[in-house]
Length: 202
Length: 154
Image 1 (cartoon, chains in turn blue, cyan):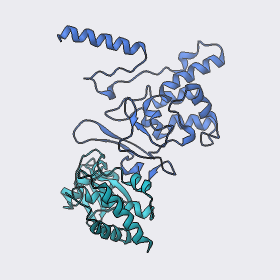
Image 2 (cartoon, rainbow over the protein chains, first blue to last red):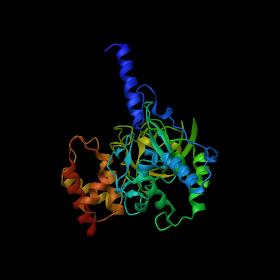
Image 3 (cartoon, rainbow over the protein chains, first blue to last red):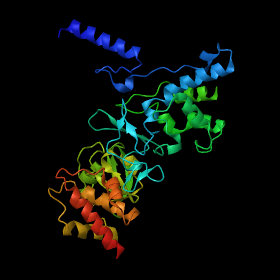
Image 4 (cartoon, each protein chain N blue to C red):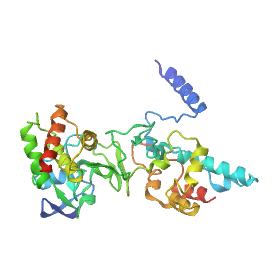
C-alpha cells in the first residue's frame, strides 16, 4: 500500500471512529499524550433551567466517571479490569473481603503509592496511595450515567458520604487524582482533578 | 543517588543508590542476595517476591525509596512454622523442576499460610495466581501447600 493510500485509510478510520465515539489512538503517539478536554462550570452558565444545567454538568462529569481509569476499578464483578480498552486484570486478581485483594495477592503486592516506570523505558505500573477496588455497592461498569448519578448520591451505597463529602472526595482523594495522571502506557481521564472537583461542586 | 537505611533478614543495611532503583536490584546487586530472581520486571510473574513488613511484595516494581525503613525478608532467611512446613512439603512433593520461580513461589506460599492457615483450593489459587511457573508445576505447588496446611494443623 502506498503512502497516499495509507493516509486515506487512516483518515477514513479516524473519521468513522470519531463518528461513533470510539477513542482514536495513533500508533506513533504515546497514549499518555492524548488528553481529552473537560468543560468548566462557567461553560454551562447559559443554561437557565437549573435541572437542565445540572444534567448537562453531570453528563460532562460522566467523561471522567465512565473513563476506563475510573470504571476499571469500579467493576461489577470481584475482578478489576485494566487497559485501553478495558480487559481483565493480568494477573487475575480478586477483590477479597476488604477490597484490598486476597492473602498473598494484595493490591499492594504490586501497586505502590505512586506510578512506577518500567526499566525498559516504556510503560508503567500504576500506583497511588491506598490502591484498592471500589466497593461492590459502587460498581459502575456497564451502568448508564443516570444510574451512576443515583448511585453516588445514595449514602447507602456511597460509603455514607454527604454531597459535600462527595465533592471533597472528587476534588482531593489521591486515588481519584491518579486517574488524571495515570502514568505512561494508559490514557488519562479528561481535564484535571481540580476541574472535576469544580464540576462536582457546581 | 541517595542513602537509604533498610533492614534485610534482620540485619541493618545502608545503600547509596538511585531512589527509583527497584528493591530487587538492591537485594541482588548491592547486598549480594541472589536468591530472589528477576523474571519479567513488570510484576507479572512473581519470581521476585519477597516479604515487606510481613506481606508478599514484588521487588521488581518496588522502588527502594518505598521499601526503605521497612522490614524485608528474602528467601535466604524465611523462617517460622509456616516456612518450615512449606519447605518440608516442597521436598516431600519434589515440587521444583527447573527451580527458577521457586523462591517467589515459596515466599507467596508462606505469606498465604500466615494469613490463611487452612486455605481451600480457591484461596490457594487466588493467592498464588501471580506466581508463574514455566515448568507448569502448579499441581505439585498446590498439593504441597495443602500438605503444609495439614502440617500446621498439628
